[in-house]
Amino acid sequence: MNSLESMNITALLEEAKKYTNKGKVASYIPELKKANSTDLGIAVITPDNKMMSAGQADVKFTLQSISKVISLALAIMDKGTEFVFSRVGMEPTGDPFNSIIKLETSDSSKPLNPMINAGALAVTNMIEGECNIERMERLLHFVRELTNNPAITYSNEVAKSELETAFLNRSLCYHMKQNHIIDGDVEELMDLYTMQCSIEVNCHELARIGLIFAMDGYDPLRKKQLIPRHIAKICKTFMVTCGMYNASGEFAIRVGIPAKSGVSGGIVGCIKGEMGIGIYSPALDEKGNSIAGMKLLELLSAQEGFNMF
Image (cartoon, rainbow, N blue to C red; front, side, top):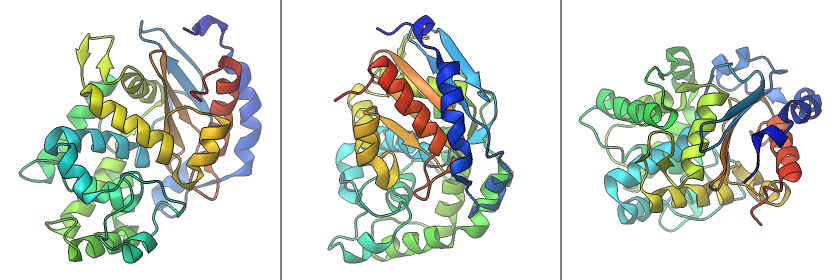
């Protein structure tokens, strides 16, 4: 097991910080444009509750697509593996995360995987509850359990901003509704999905989420299984194959750890049995991944020998 004391994450962060000027903050969701493009933070936590952080690790940001891993785990816990994957596929895609192309060209109109927007929308549609208030409360409770923080909530401002500009996501929903992949009211689903994406965390809380996945769903701090082991493994597999959008293959070669990014600049990573990692840096590449965040993970993986391959 790697020792936190031997990991000089401050030096690695300083090296990676040079890359913050190579990307751009997401602008298609107006509220996200307010982020400071030079921010870079990291937190790592081990099963014995030791934590180390550097940079802007306390800055709050929204989960965005990182929430897709969490909603997938909850949906499988609610509906079972067979039901979930009867409506969502398991294959990576080389297309952008918000692409509609594969929905139109696939015989079944089934989204290729749960990490692209179409698949994530279909998954969120499966979360149980009588109404959106109940479904969102269940999601929030789940994230609060994973982070061990009962104060976790979501940003109304980001959710509203995202809902008002989510025209392409609405198109994905209507296409899937036409083909019986989703049911119910599209606007209700969009409301829930934007709230889900707008759940706020910092690097410390994100690292705790990563730790739960690193421990196959088990919380070593409170000695309880939060996600069934087989479901945590499914989620981690998607993180490897699809977690970094259509850059997942290159990321697997360069870094080689299960990770999931979001367009707010967050990245969650997990080292099996060893640690969870939370990173934030909002300057993105053209595929929607944090440039400095990915570089920091690459440097950390190389230094500590984290590459799972």
